[in-house]
Image 1 (cartoon, rainbow, N blue to C red):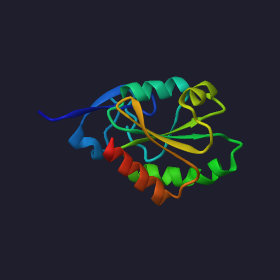
Image 2 (tube, helix red, strand yellow):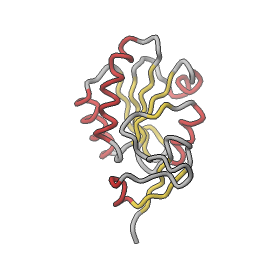
Image 3 (tube, one colour):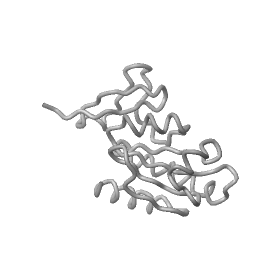
Image 4 (cartoon, one colour):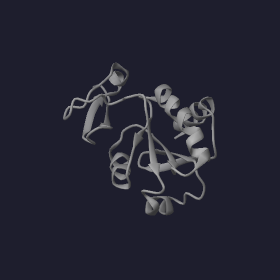
Length: 147
């Protein structure tokens, strides 16, 4: 029997079952037909973050950022490029600490930008500060493999 993974749609948040062997074949959402992987980070509210965390069968790499943060804006293009390299092995997402301050406080986000990797519904690694795309891909890939 082929292993299936739950993949949350970045467009409508429906949970889809996708055979692991077919993740790289451009799967689409069964509900809204949007691509399940779009080679870019997904913007998540606190509610959507919790839904993705609970229902995703692949690790979730989250950039905690704020619009007023210069280093956050500086790292944004690198994080977007990393999404193109890390999907479909990981889902990349952005959570604004301005829009989700309670979540940031709950998770102990003390500086931004902060990258946090979640697997199996729990945080498994964290890295604060600006990183270039090569470092994001290397760190996230290594941390996900160790999780």
